[in-house]
Image (cartoon, rainbow, N blue to C red; front, side):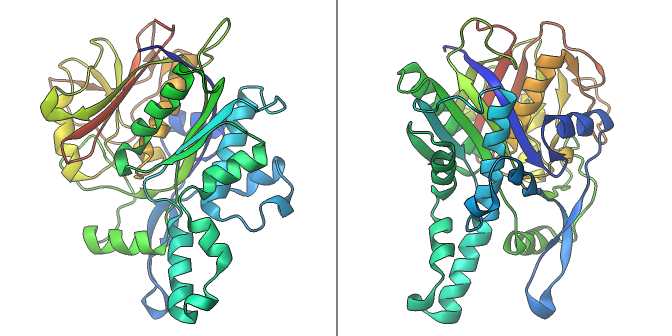
Length: 365
């Protein structure tokens, strides 16, 4: 595969806004936990959640530009602006910039608000603003319009595999030279319906995630956005390394390729049903980390793993594993140390026998 250069990263999550906030969370091993409402009226309760704040968007856009735009699309807008700013390309022309957004839930809050307006007021009086924002490609459209990006625009939704499927599209656009750069991002939001579902499926919420204890249910819902500016590379390119390999398929057909000496970032996020599969895939002697305790459980969590991989390569150091890790003779949890010339590999499995993987390394080959 031709490697893609990662030129800029923009992140928002429960840890805060921007790469500095993510770096601080990685160093400290902790991230603030908020409270997510779980039901309406008298049934209302709350459970722990990693919630993201989009107010920093005012730094890039006047308020009137996004006053009718919902929380989901604001997260995408903020992530995309942060990625361009980080790459030093906020003021450049965007005639050949493509936009690819991955999401598992889509604009969940707005979609359910629109359905409520249909039930309460009927078809003819349902909210047109909520309808326009509930359309699945709305966030990508807002990003393209407000950035003036005139390349192709696409939203990919394949639940926990959305990130890998969307990355394959971004790579194809660049290889075909349909665009000069791709603004790729993963974004998901959480709301009362998701909180209610977690409460019904998993009971009382926990406040401390332990994703490396694979058989323990410890998922805490999260929301946020992680965006990247990807190019074909060139002189001085790849500030955060090169995306050199993308894997996507069924475990029964051979499983992922994991470089022997790679730092392995697992997409384990505290769901016991998926966690059981990771133990069998970790190579013997591997150094392993799962950073979900810093941004929570969300379908596009692999986009945050990719951000951590880029940051790890840029700084040349390994961030310690947050939360508990079991002692065993097969692999070891990541601890503070130097990365050296090793690649960083991300791995996600969905509990249905499907996997996605990526490898980020220092050079294009």
